[in-house]
Length: 339
Image 1 (cartoon, helix red, strand yellow):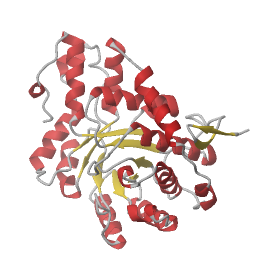
Image 2 (cartoon, one colour; image 1 turned 180 degrees about the vertical axis):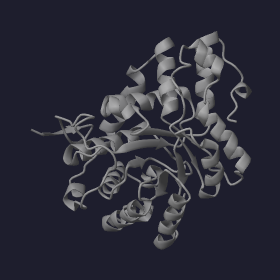
Image 3 (cartoon, helix red, strand yellow; image 1 turned 120 degrees about the vertical axis):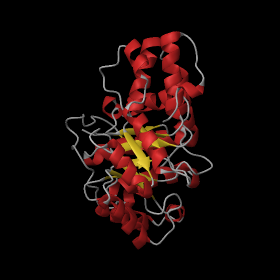
């Protein structure tokens, strides 16, 4: 029997949880918009902050264990370039790094050269899809395109839907869209649901990752409710940030989001992924997010099918930490170029 408990101040459904083989596999089909469910959402900010503070405080992995966790973080990474001066050459170099994210000599010294380490995906603007797809052909690495008026999400809905369709037609495996935050701030939940559902339908077979831009949503209750509405509308992933807001991914907002994922799975049986993006630039911080996923959602959420870290500079710091594990010395950043 499913019971209800208050964990960290948020009302969530408690076990027994569907296991990895019991929860429905594949895409999240969504469900009807449930306004009563949204109205019942409560979040205790101080309790969330206390719980989030325990994650880096009581989880410390060292030596070989740390190296293993850092290699896992790489496999869950969306290697990203979203700059106004992106060029095909820059994207090609990034994709080469995605195929071989860690130097071969380091992998060999770590005994990991047979693991086939690669990133979870490469994320680019629509204009850079062609060089990304060409460079990653045959690698099995998905290509994600940011879409739907990224990063503001304020262009007309019809244009944003057409943009999603265009990226899917061009070959994107995943679509990262951003919601209109004004709908959340004014509690227009039907508008949020209809918008995300339109993107879901436009994606076809491509996976939909919805960015709720937590730094713009004012309260943790808004974060929880926006997350739920996006999942009800059929989001395959919920994502913290565009990386362009003043405040991006943090452990407290991520905790609230992963607990809404847990609640949604308990009610519907459908698993939804989580992507933390923006401000995660050090290996140490990436370990905190791996711990969060393991403790709150379980082992299944330590795989790229259900967990991603949006990053551009993180990979360089992880590679430095791995070299320190091998040599006992920290190297200069230029020894670990992105391409």
